[in-house]
Length: 271
Image 1 (cartoon, rainbow, N blue to C red):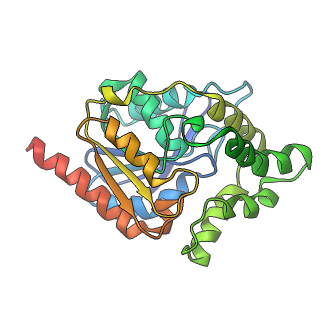
Image 2: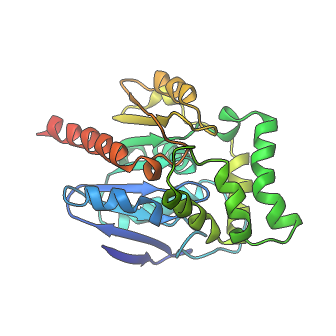
Image 3: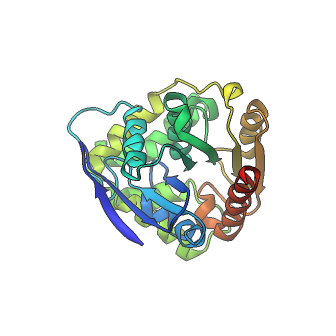
C-alpha cells in the first residue's frame, strides 16, 4: 500500500493499492483514511482502491478559510484527475456518503457507481432539531467551551455511535480516529456539513447504487436508509445485523462481501 499527497490547495493525502478500476472510499465526519484499512486489503487484489483524508483530516492539509461543503467534491475531482481516470466507483460512509451524493450531483459523468453506507441526504433529514443539537453538543461543547482537545472529546463521542456488539479493539480504532482530528478543521466541517441542506434528487440517480445500513445505528437508522433506497431507481438495499454506525469497522467481513458482490456484478454486466 502506498501513501501519497496530491498537490494543490489544500494537499490531499490518501492510501491506495491494487490495479484496475478505481474504487474510492470516503470517511465520515469523525474519521480518516485508516478507517478503510480492511476494505483496501480485501479489494486491492481486484481493483485499484484508494481511501482519502478529506481536507483538514489526517495527513491532508488544513486551510485558512471557512468550509464550503462542495469544496470536498472539488477535492475529490482532483483525486480522480491524479489517477488519470474519467470515472470511479465511490463508497462513502455517513458524511462521506453525503459527499458522494453531491459529487454525483456536480460531476455525474465521473461516477461509475455509488455505495452509500450509514448516510443521509442532509443532516436534518435524519436528525430532529433536538437530536442534532445533542449531537453537536457532545462534540462542540468540549472543544469550544471547555478548551478540550479532540483526544479528550473522543471517548464520549465514540460511545454515541458505536454499536453494543463492537469489540474493544474496534472501539479503540474509532476513538483513535476521533482523537487525531484537527480541532479547527473539524469544527469548520461540523458547521458546514450540518448547515448544508441542499439535497441530491435521489429519483434522478441513473447509475448503480447500493445502500448499506445496520441494526444498531442510532444516527442513521435502517428505516431511513430504506426510504432513501425507495427513491433511487433500481437501487439495492442491504441490512447488516449487529453493527452500529461504523459498519465497515464493526462488521468488516460482511461489509466487504457486499462490496465485492456489488462491484463484481457491475463488471459482469459490462463484459
